Length: 156
Ligand SMILES: [Zn+2]
Image (cartoon, rainbow, N blue to C red; front, side, top):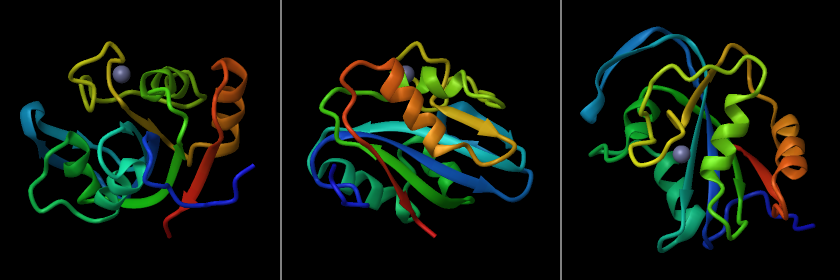
């Protein structure tokens, strides 16, 4: 078992856990104006380019001056609380989205968010209470074959 709590520079998949404290309407690029209600959001992505998960999460920790991904718009007005990540060499984001969508209390409020080029519906999930890392990890290990270790970084 590795002990590092932070994403490294190799590729992998990740989930951002964000808290939105108030109702707000945002213009989200090609999706247009979207109302976000208060609550917890989980966004699923992967990063297999240069710098891997570390570089991508570095991007998400800050606020993008020029939003590029859908999540950049939401990230700019919410608080990043946790990063769940794995350096499993398989791209797990779509499998993870399916798992999250079946979690208790999960909804997928915005069709197409973060999922312009796949069949997931969206890669953004909303919860009334913080989603459980341990619950997610257990189900991923149980349901997804040969899954590499999944770790949690607390951002603040
Ligand atoms: Zn997908």
